[in-house]
Image (tube, rainbow over all chains, first blue to last red; front, side, top):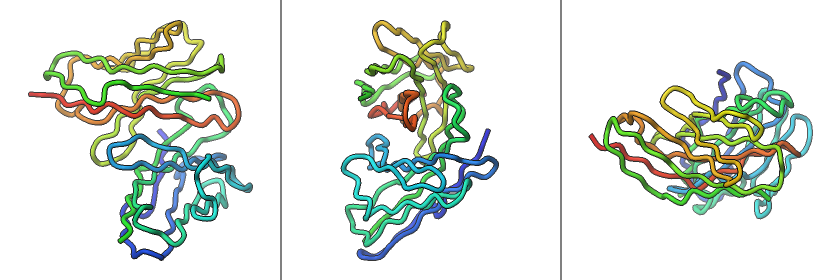
Length: 119
Length: 115
């Protein structure tokens, strides 16, 4: 199956700094990428949906100025947590979808996730 | 709006036994897909099985089968012959085919397989 990578897998940073997380589709072109966050023992919550070359669509309650998403190419999307605070500590997972096919379950692939700890 | 409900926060099963993880859903969209994912402690989401709303037969993938009851809006996952490596969080999810086709997840069920 297709592979999605995330970098870094772990990041620890001081409060007030910005953190960039990369999501790459390694062997396919991802027209759409999704960013999720997951708190311990909770479900995945969709933060935003991004299409290559256009602005991301954020879910209700997600601050777009806080979580900057750039989908610059068909293989790369980045999530930047600006001025991170301890409450931003979470597990961030991206997923990528190939093409616009609407009926095949294997068109959305998940990255391995990035654990962010803000001190 | 779409909603996924998993009412079992945790389940135990004896090794080699079968276990059913419950999932109910709600959507007004007639066309949708239902997924089950496994998330071990390492965090990665592992796709297990998929059922389309128009699929006539229940999906099966090896030891995983999906008991799809459309009228009851349920999509339970059945794991047969449980193995110790099946211990993980299991998430039910749904995708509707309008808009960006985003996937909505349930709250998950933590399965522990007992030797």
